[in-house]
Length: 629
Image (cartoon, rainbow, N blue to C red; front, side, top):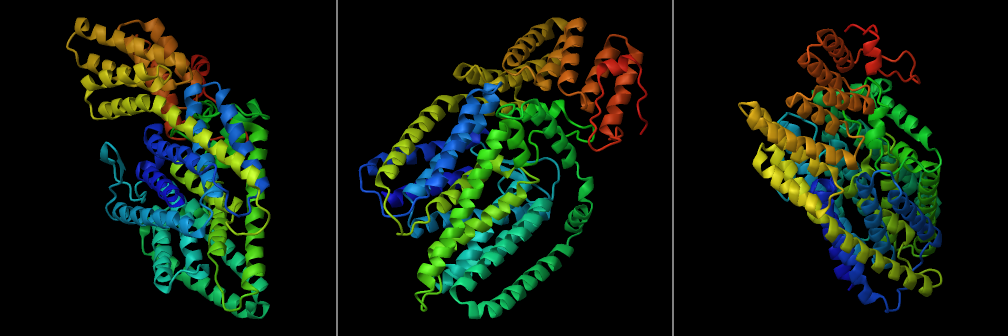
């Protein structure tokens, strides 16, 4: 059964990558279902004698504590729907982790999964090359292939964001590199792996991800340092020669990559941005996240809450929607508090320690006593995992790769390898492994049942979103209603239904025809606000619909609620200005338009990096001096 588990798990990871990395629940649920099926299917092997392999109790304990804390915090988060993504991701990652640590302990089966993931890396790089050359980015989903209407030369592969592709490729490059130098594979396989190293790093270059450039460089240096450390243990006399050779290879690689980088004006521009990294707008997002952290330092504000606290505390310099903090560490700290961050750091530190012990023991116990054996598959996988963790650890400082299911599941597999190296040392903890296998089966059952219950809602909601984007308004209401019937607690179908009705109303030639559509839109928006009262989008569209019915006092309150939720977003003042002009308040409209222009142009510069400045409607009523462009 172990080969079947390996194939099913590989299929789940590959499927999630192909469905835009599972960036939405509608796209992550198919992969989660396969993971749940694999975990539940492990019941077949529950009574069989566990294989002889060492299992780090410290690693397992921190993994269970971290995943358990995320799940419990999600259950007690203020917005049940926003917390759903983290809850499912934590459960799926724990299932992948336990499958890898308990069942897929032989290097052969782990290499099957690595091979499948490397094949995905080639696809990402190939599609990314097309993006980089043509500027036409697109992604694949089970509804077809969607191409973005605007030009964007940053390669993103089959994922939505180029940073996420860089995070995936930089990790897989370390696996290919480790196979090349440390595995016992045949020479043909090693040459292919060497080619894949170049392919992955070429994809990172084309992504133009500055975080990817820095983390790739850092992880390469870490891998080189680990390799030299192993050589020193095995044969100290050869250390100097190997060190010189490693330095020469690194210099050659960086020289070749530098030549490739300077050939493109776009890439040169991104590198120039690195030289001015202190001007990056991410720092303002981080400040907003720290403001969020101050609200509940110990346990955090709850899963998914950065979506609206990032808006509430946004700095004027950021006008894009701050859906994530652009730092996995800070978002973890804000949403899960000091307790969650401490558990995450303990999880990371214990697994890195376990990986280093495995590498040392393989070097001393196998390579030192077998002069004819200079390679080890266990060592190759361990060094690759340590390098990959270094890559994602560095990249997570400035991006949110671990909030993307496709990449998070990859690292659940990586940490599972570190927790259980798959060697035959130590006593066999039969009782512990049997208990954990039972936990895995229960987890798989829970994941399957939960996905089965929630998937219809997410599927219909996503279909209504796509119909709205395609201007098929008649379909939107029907699809959204199906989503609502499947799960009334999701606020998104209400928004899509309201948008379709509002846009239909705007097309009507007279008031009598548009009135029922505006009423339908208002009812949908108000229902959505019951489940997501902090959503500025619902408030603004509610205000516009109320304006359509000349219910101006109610509309004014809706606009004020929207601004209260996101006081530094310029477009909200533009919407409010249109409302003010509609009711004849020309002076107020001009003030709002000036504020919108100032915010949109980034003119509200903060005098001090730690000072948060907020524009509010009360300021406008008191006639503040709006900075000129």
